[in-house]
Image (cartoon, rainbow, N blue to C red; front, side):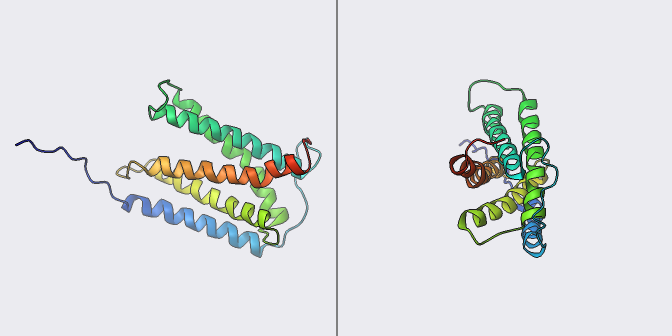
Length: 181
């Protein structure tokens, strides 16, 4: 009789702290967004005509880089049959995240978490959720013993949320206002 080789059981325990901290980030951003009195004032539009086009184009850049993230992750996991250097995944993720910082800052500082318009409410909640997911993913990244699905699920959810953010902001802007810089 042959013994069946079993993979060591991977526990959800190593995920508790990253998920808890990610949840606290979501909560903190949401509470701050509601409690903070929005200034209505844009800070540093960096060559753009206004804050909204700046946010739209930076979010579009992050969205394009998120697609690079998905493709490079699939390559790293051997799903494409081609090899993309791991640095592409790391740097596209870093750049995508950096592009979101001025957008999130403006959203929270100048606008706050809004709930009067369904699209804007969805966008506000997705923004808070994105940073919580990103935090959980980054904290889970170096953890040993996590289930094999951890990074693909957290990465896939981060991508999905970023697509939702793009649809509720940039796509809406491009279809309602047009291509403005």
